[in-house]
Image (tube, helix red, strand yellow):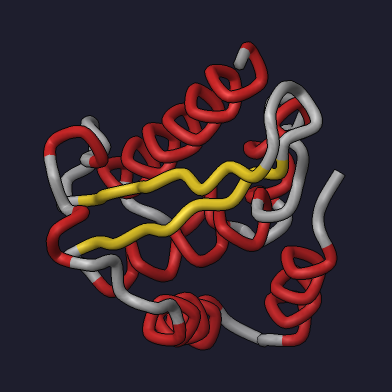
Length: 142
């Protein structure tokens, strides 16, 4: 269950020949993301378990399980900003109920991220996915 935006990223990754090109693409995705306002980079939005500083701010439209999920994010590391952009493509626009059904590990493995990120980055990516899932679950419970 992937969004069209995530499918576009997966298609681009399939087209790119080597990991260096993919790595550059991840960084470009991060650069294209709008920055999170400095005032929103607070302990409540900070994601623990990441080597870099990461903030995720949910944006939920509606109420209950059918509420639409979106978020803003920021990191002090360009590659991590790119990973946030990829997660945004994976989850943005889904209902909060659908967010919990996304098999993020499987979807992200299609990009080869599981084979090319350091263990610290992989742990941080898992922490971001878990934060997103928790935010959606809280919104679904409403």
